Image (cartoon, rainbow over all chains, first blue to last red; front, side, top):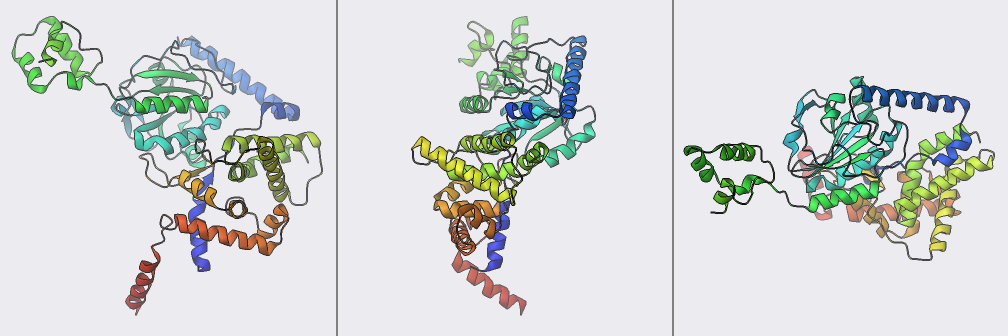
Length: 274
Length: 180
């Protein structure tokens, strides 16, 4: 083998970068904190409290307050506000300024992550999100990382510095967060199934293994859509006739591809079974 | 060592140290714990800075990994659930190279060659430093590295842009003729 071949192969190997571990355990840092570090933590804490108060002033529900800076893993629950809703029909700009409509991502399993460049716990889970993206993208998985930075010029350099290019990074704000039922602290993540339904909310740093398991479960679930409930000709027949108010509602519902359209006794249900 | 310095070392060396620990134990989660234990010990002990901190850290992680494997008393198996590497070229649509394939190929190498490759390529250790970590001669370290690299190239060569050997020769002849 030629030495230059070795060098080229080494360069190839170096394109694979070792993934960074999490931060040093808290027990180490507590014993090693300098007064300056303590002051910085106090400042972050105060900022977090201010954030919570500000968000609550804006009418957001204080569900499981998780102040930015705290890195505790909080178990998700379907009772959290947000779970059960459909992904909003919302346009958010990406880093190039092009709008991305979230509802058009239906058909994929999504992990929607609210983060900010100044949020230390967010940085802990970013390598995990890139891992998930790398591993499951081919199966129809997409991480949507919505930045809550007020100064959005920070996002691009942050994405580059942390190698997040394989994530779909969008620029958001509290208005976007409200569409997900409100985000009190960062990071907060939502898992969305292929039908665009928010199935769980994960306030705080995600439990990597549990979320990965949930992603795998969602990827294995088939997409359920009302597209198959009514054929075009059946739909046209309904339009040609003189549909009742109920029919009109069902037609409207089928346009939006809402689940549970087919109900025993309904006109649409009867047609689809023909 | 000052704690700021130890934390700086952690930031600088921990990703490659975790990859090295993973290459020994087969499990990233175990390697991550071991690396953190090594730094925890450094913070507690308040020892003087070693002559070569990088080689010292690799040696410490190696000892911790060997102890853990001895205590567990089981064969090392590759756990592909938590990868050690992320491919820089991977894209959102799933194209690009998989770090998992690299990990599996590395794990097929004999352990002494595997650790020489990981230390040199991702840790940036010189053969003298690898020799100090493994308590062998620098020549032995270099030959373990070369054997390991050659085997790895056999497994991954085509993905790295190599063409099969026969075609490479044919291409060389063709290129030579074109240049003339």
